[in-house]
Length: 289
Image (cartoon, rainbow, N blue to C red; front, side):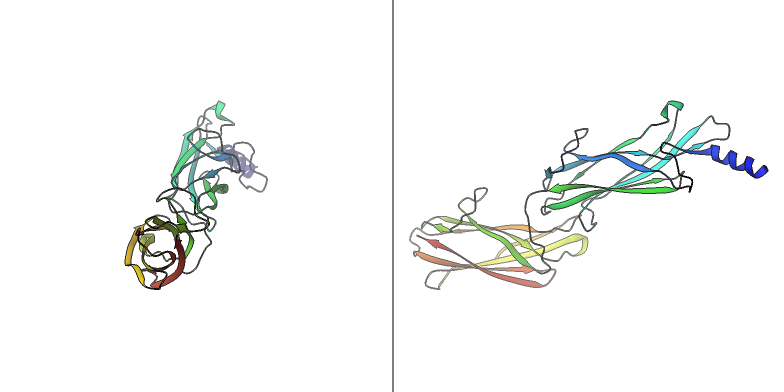
């Protein structure tokens, strides 16, 4: 009889917001109404929506099924939650520092079915490739001693790369303009034109604090095989990021002479990963008409 009274008193201290805990004592803690948005308080984006590198992404979620602690005389009911929100890639690597917080509050009688809402926002990395990503949500209930996780998927558009384990160059393209414009299907120019090239550096190693350190040189051979241009140190690029860079965009311009020889010119591009101590070489060609 005494044991029954003690158990009855204990059960009055902790209750659960609907749905209640099951007979096995497992919490019904859940993350509900979770999604990503273009702006704070905006509607959730559709499934096919694409964010882009450098965009802000906004997150909203609510929590249900949390434990409620009631004091012995029933005059106070309280809740105690903590949460962590992290944007991640498919490998679980964070894109930005997580947003954390707590929800500790007293509940009035009319708060019986209240589901607290929280928000977070993140700046997406500028050197991230297109792909599938997720918002990883974790909520802990300090009263019910339970935890729940949920992933909210989202898409990033922009540059699509082929993952590489070693240094390489992808998407080498010729243009008529320094910025913008469409890549040329046939890289043919007139004498005196400027030849614009853009390419992506992929497969390099990141060092301490996700630092990369790359350099590249360009040599151009004229149709007769002589050196038309030689820039062994055309560019050097180094930067540190919270998220390890997946690719680095690069470019180069060749200014041709109005008296240059007509024919095919060969570009010899040499890229060095100064952290990974590796080198990659590629050969490209354009023509002057």
